Image (cartoon, rainbow, N blue to C red; front, side):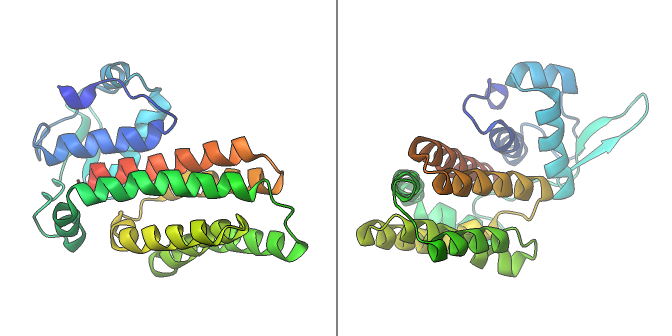
Length: 234
């Protein structure tokens, strides 16, 4: 099954969630079906069993999978993800955007990673550093409504810290283009934990004056978000 090909890249959790979601959406594992055994699936995907369990837990938390104990136990699909044209306004928007979605995600990866790199080269004032830390703290909010706003505010703060007005404008534009879709990712605790950890690495690298580290951390963050969008909505 092509969905079970090896996971590659630095976002094993997000990619694994996306692979499982794609398999469910495409009907390769239908409602009522059991996923392959954990050991076998981890070997096929070339991920640790810890990562696989986290990904399964994320989709279980979102209501798509359930785990059953006993001789006939395992992990079962209990609710199929909607097709790109069904139920969800965000899914319909993703379909409507078509290649524009991929363009926006690629553009975001380039400009946001560049902004983080540039911000780490700047001699930030005490106020700028405090503002970044404040935005980082606010971005950890778990309320779905305020979290999206605070997440976007952190990315815009990083853009502003780059000191380049053109870059900041580009990031504001791409955040606006993707806002509805980013806000439509199911609120899954493990995904939020990963996102929070990535945000922390980005800000810490900027404050430490580590351009390469800031760029790499932002690239991994953007890649992880893109995988989730493509897996859950694409």
